[in-house]
Each structure stands twice: as structure tokens, then as C-alpha cells.
Length: 96
Image (tube, rainbow, N blue to C red):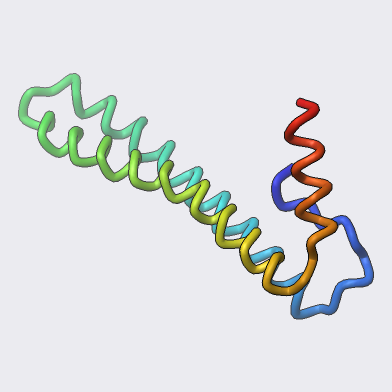
């Protein structure tokens, strides 16, 4: 899992930040899904098609935010000096 903390010895502030990243990632995911579902329904009605198109665009922007949130979190890990966590994630990604 992307936001799974591996070290239980982290400070409460670090754990709070970690949780906030997880919440942000989930909120963005739900927001994007919501935009796509509502946009899809709007596409059934000619009068709502333009609004539906805007919802699709907004949902796409939200989906683009997901890797941005992950990158921001990983850059914070790097700045904190938590290279081992990043290296473990890289090993896990390369093995599937």
C-alpha cells in the first residue's frame, strides 16, 4: 500500500503527516470518481453535456493530482533522510 507506515518508532508529528497524506490521496480519489460518475450521468442529457464535460476535465485533473501527492510525500521522506523507506518501495515496485 502506498501510504503504509513501516516504522512504528516515528514521532506523533510524523505519523500525523503520514495520515494526512493518506487522507488527501483518498479524498482526491473519491472526488475524481464522483466527477466521472456525475459527468457520465449528465452525458445522457443534451442540456447537461457541457457541465458533464467540465466534470470529466475536473475529474481528470484530480486523477493527475494522485501521483503528485505521492511524489510530494516521497520528496518529504527524502528530505527527512528516510532513504531506506524509499529504497524498499523501489524494490517492491520493481518486483511487481
